[in-house]
Amino acid sequence: MGPSDRYEFAPGLAELEAYLRARFRSNRGPDRGNIALAYWIEVAFRIGDDTYLDFTDGKRLRAKAVSYEP
Image 1 (cartoon, one colour):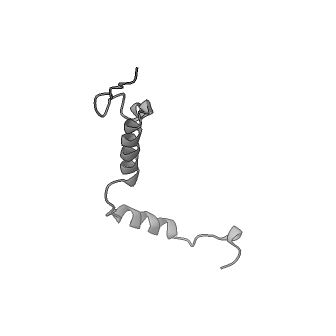
Image 2 (spheres, rainbow, N blue to C red):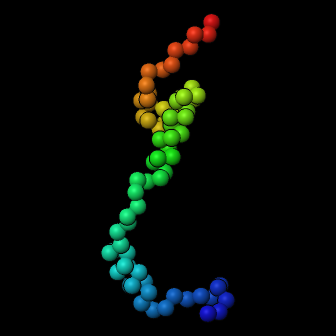
Image 3 (cartoon, helix red, strand yellow):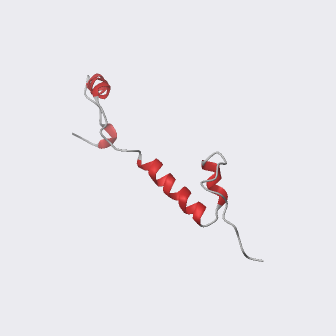
């Protein structure tokens, strides 16, 4: 072992890692980042924050809400 600032990988580990990486298949579900972004886009729309349009290529989720204030 030894001090962490002097750790060295054993010879052959890079090759082993490349071998394993080429065979690894992720079983993860949908990307959580995309789910979170979709949630925040919906929240922004509901509160009238049009900055969500930056993430939807300017496309509205639904027709803009009508304001009945004078």
